[in-house]
Length: 330
Ligand SMILES: [Zn+2]
Image (cartoon, rainbow, N blue to C red):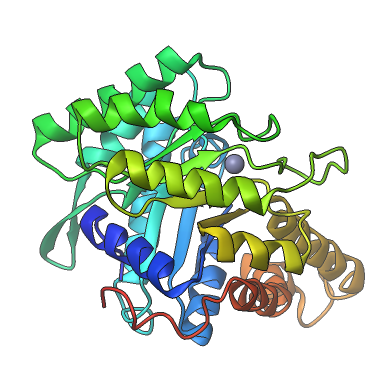
C-alpha cells in the first residue's frame, strides 16, 4: 500500500523505535519498481521507492518533462502498490535529489498530488515524503526553499513529511549546522521535518576516496535533530553503496532510519542485462524459434529480476527490515 505523508511518519517512528532502517531504492524503471515491491513482499518489509530528476526527465517516465515523469511514476507505483499481492507491503514514495529550475514545479505536483481515475474510482495520488538536492545551495537558500514547500502544502491543506539535507558528500557535517538549518524550519513550520541527512562520511557512487563513515556523527545528529524538533528524527544515509555490512549495521544502531541505495542497485541490474544479451545471442536471431520472447522487454527484465530481487532482500535483511511490514501502519 502506498503510504500517505502521515503514515510514512509512523513508519519512520516504528523504524527508530525498533532499531531498523528502511531501504530506499532509487528505482530507475517500471521493471525496477516491480522488483523492489516483490523483494519487500518476500521479506515482509516496508520499502521506500525513490526517484530523482534524472528518472523523472528520462525515457521511461517523463521523456523530457519531469512533471509528466512524476505523474507516470506515481501511476506506475500506486497501481502496483495498491493491488494484490502488494497491498500488505508498506510502500513510501520519496522524491530524491530534485534540483534545478523545475524544482518547485515538480515538488508542487508531488506534494499537492494528481487526481487519477482508477477503474472508476477517483483517487488523489501524491508523494509520501519529500526532499530536494541542496548541494548547490547556501544554507539560507536551503531554508528558503524548504519553507516554500511548507507553504505550498499548507496552502493546499495537505500534510508534508520532509527530509532536509546538508552537505551529504562533504565529510562530516558539524553539529551546529543542524541548529542553523532545522531550527528555523521547525520554528516557522512545526511538524514537517522527520528525516535529516547530514554528511556522515559517505559519498555518492563507488569512489574509494570517501571520508571514513562515522556512526558517531549519526548518533550526534540524531540526538540534536530530535532535541531541536521535539520528536524522533531519523537520519537518512546517502551514498551507502560502498559501505560494508558492518558499517551499515552500526549506522542503523546509531539512528539511521532510511538508507538510500542507487549505484550498487544500478550496477547489479546493468550487469545482469549485459549477461542476458551476451548469453542469448543465438535466440536473438530472427530465425530462432524463441526470438520474440527473447527480444521482448519481458525477456531481459525477467532475467534481471531473478538476479536482482535476492540482492534487494539481502540488503533489507542487513538493515534489519525483514518481517517489519506489520509493525508500522498497516
Ligand atoms: Zn543521495
